[in-house]
Image 1 (cartoon, rainbow, N blue to C red):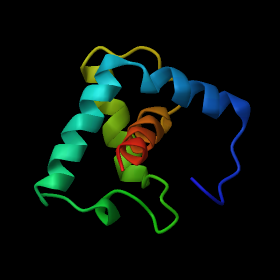
Image 2: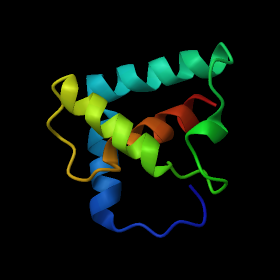
Image 3: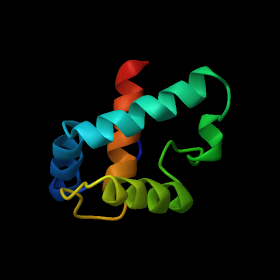
Image 4: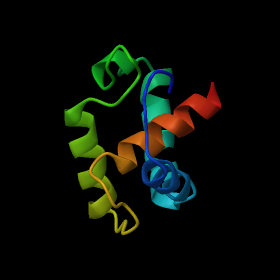
Length: 89
């Protein structure tokens, strides 16, 4: 994401979470929603491309509910999902 200053701890968390099968499944589900036009990116991101707080909360909760244990910040799962979506484009 351009224009965003991040510390190494956030980049490290994102890199670790992107390899997590739970995050990969969440990203695939979001991609399916985008492809089916059931959801638009502006519903869960700001104009800058960063996750909305609502999306951060939801992605974090869903990650935990599915057994995820590697997230260290509330925004980690959402950032990882968005990063995977960007890689698909």
